Length: 102
Length: 387
Image 1: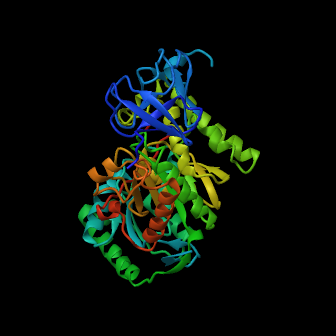
Image 2: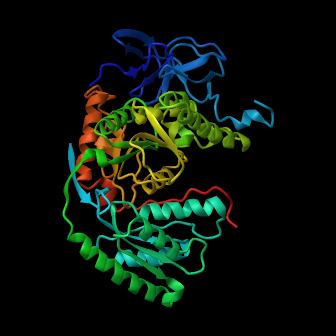
Image 3: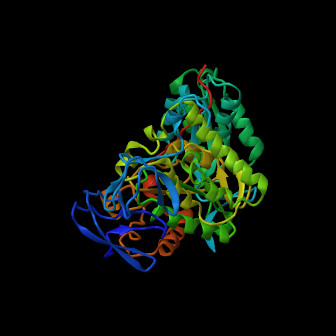
């Protein structure tokens, strides 16, 4: 079994994907290209969901696979759960267009 | 590298030898089912269209029917119509005969036959004769480069982009290295990842076509004034950990491997290029699958995180679980497990090799779970409203 409980895809990512349910308060170790990061998890994070591995300011870009997957809609501390409650997608957002020009 | 397949008189290769019963209009669905259930081994499809369609919409539906009829996995076809529909069974049958003069094609028109029971009786006789003739054919060794792979991911979870899709990308690369073709589709699920695929285009025209196709899809969502997250990622995707269309797309695009992009084609259009091809399809699993199979894809590899039973009636659909928990929970639907990448038991390259080996085994006759379950999913993509 994998001793790591979360996966980071690229060194520039600011999120990791957890590969088992993690309870709030747990300390986990994450590996990225041979370096390991220790992180205290603040929220309960379900399997497959993302955890912030750095502090992320509101409106900062959230990076996974080395690419932008959205922006933070609130400040997110390292160890917090990142999901639709604090990540806003930038693409396919007809709700933001409201008849205005791009 | 070979598989054991059926060499057709026009040089194409089939990996199955189906007798297909296809209604050209939804009014003929029950007759098609009646015929196929009378003949052991025959397959059929059902759908909601074939009438009250105009212009490009009607042409596209006809293209999907004809694509299934001329498909090399189909030995022979019974085309069932009602008699008054827009897409007429006799026209579809004529187009199939034009493309494949060697192929048995029989047309049943319910109104001309004098009702459903007589139509089923006549169609059954034709399908039975085809099935007996089909069963006499032998498989022979055919180069793997003859194969067209359709790639698909659905019911995605956060593991799809970490395990199943990169492994499928490896298998896609292996097939292309062997001289074959792989299709990347699901335009809605390339929004936010288009640069990754478009920048691999073989020339500027293909690159621009790739960008334009994805932009058009995103613009159509925008003109509806909706947040795509209402439907994509789906509620199940979101529960599985995906937060935005970009995140889903960046995981999806991995299944297209790393090879140059040769061509961009429309839904259900014939696949003629070798190498990686992008087909413009919705993210909807069954509409995508139908489009790829109509284009000529022999075999589909479908990665899934949440689990799905989907399968084409004529193109074996291999299901790859992206996580071990779902693989164990849905053993009757899943053919392979890529969750071993998540647990660290295997690498992406190892699972990619395993998917490729399974593709060749299935191409040679091994049944997929979806085939054993009798999945016959088929759906027509619509452009305009019904009239």
